[in-house]
Image (tube, rainbow, N blue to C red; front, side, top):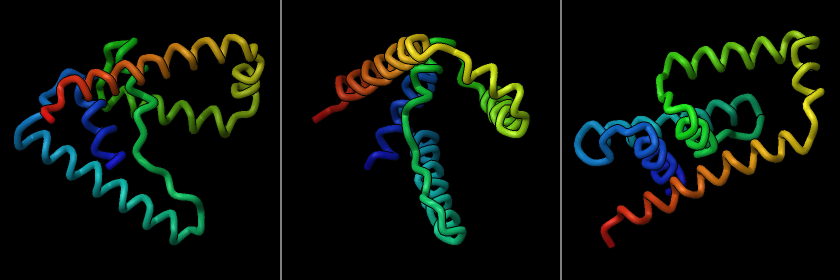
Length: 122
């Protein structure tokens, strides 16, 4: 249930159709990859990751929902994790600044969730 709502919210923020065959295929692929990731994490005896809507705030702020941009962000995060000097720069950011950015992002996620609920036909 959570994955379906998160995928719908991501589609809504990304300005793609939230109805039809293409959307159903997107939801099916998201749930399948979520289950496959949980299975693989169990094989490696680590806690599974799940689909979450945290990045919807970033998509709403930047208006960039490109998968290539997401892959570049992933590469940078891996690079920052490997190179300690670069990650030290991010650790030097003050906590109030991180808190303000996080509050703004999660407020965007909450607004996206309310928008999805408003468009639902009960």
